[in-house]
Image (cartoon, rainbow, N blue to C red):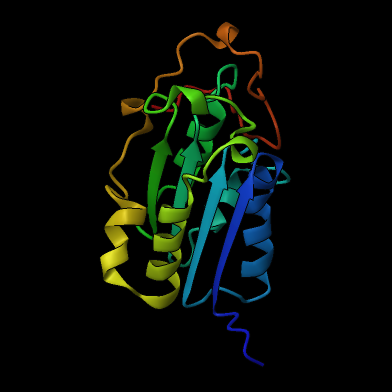
Length: 180
């Protein structure tokens, strides 16, 4: 009886990050998150079990979105750019955080196992802003929200330089597309 289903958030890393979108879809379809919701995929795969229509429907109610990457060598960032772009709209506040260039030792997908957790501060702020309405937490979680362009962080140039290839067609989404 203490569970507030009107405020929900989904966090996932890697495969879980790819599933975070469809998990939020299921929560929204069940009527959850009407007073606040967020998604925070960390180093996510493509949006598993989602098509463009599904991604667009996630913005029917206000949602906050923080994408976090470590700039992992070999992982094609276009997949994340496409996910970031598909969750675009007036009802979505979003931020893209890339820690790769700042900390070269973090440029690996196993980062969450190996080092101090860099996502705790933005995650705490994202929860405080989305679920409790804490305006002071907004700039920590969503600095530049709705305006931030991932190409300022990293530019996907040569699709042949990545060991992890983007998905050219999955449920009518081309993750190899140049979106900026």
